Image 1 (cartoon, rainbow, N blue to C red):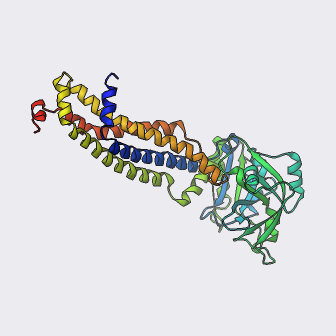
Image 2 (cartoon, helix red, strand yellow):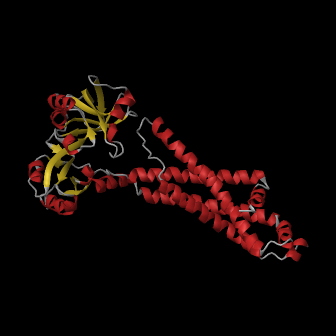
Image 3 (tube, rainbow, N blue to C red):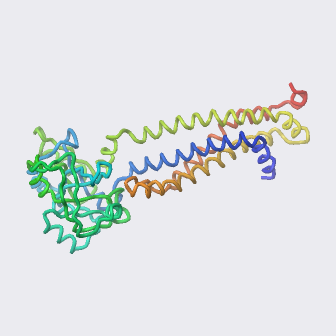
Length: 387
């Protein structure tokens, strides 16, 4: 644009005010970028083809309510079910409660239902043959410096052993990697034998936390889920079967509606930003009333003046917003690294950039509209006379 130098000069006419406003815009869009990444992380389920062919069966009433182990063979006999595995939450921590470990007690065929878990045959064989054996994700091993052959004590605040001890000792027999399209956090898992867990824990009673079913075709998910749930209808252990993605979404929503929370926060932030930047633009145009009158006097049209003020407003939002999104994109990997992978924020998506730019332009137009219209309707004689 041939008038860009005039717009730039007007934008930085009051450098301190403009810089403080840019910092506010930068902060708002940095927050937008990071919160959108958090929302995306909670929304991310298993995107792999294998994940689309898995169902999860839990208690209809609560995920913390266990199900009888006897359902295993009955579910396996349901039409459309190829294989059934089961798991139980262990809830262990390493040395100190703050060193929480995502640990599950799993059936011997659990890994078979998760081809995203990449494990050597030798390690799988040792796991099957070792009662106290454990398989751990590569990220978890890196986090604590664990290696195959180590004896690792985990303490469970939920499940003490029958001898009264809350500390359980496991032998690391395998470290698995995960496929590129694996769900977030899969490489942080600690897998132990359900049979060992059930026999040794003080509350062992032949119950499991949830079942995982591999089905023949994803399109049959609803029909198969209905047949599975009918097995326990009107019993004291009624079940709820859903796709793995739906299960992960419902599990995340126990913390609250993440989308609603993020939307509410960003709504408040952007509303405040509109008030702040609107005030800045109104002051900037009011201070330049006589200068705008001079521009009209020397031949600038009303449309040109309107366009210049609107462009100044949008440019201010774009400068601050793009810097803010850039900072968010650079901070998120640092957050993931600092947490040793416990907090895994996905990279900034192109969709987030695009949505951010739309917000920048939209807010720029909204806050610049009234000052721009005022400048366009400015009467030259009145403005030069100071009226």
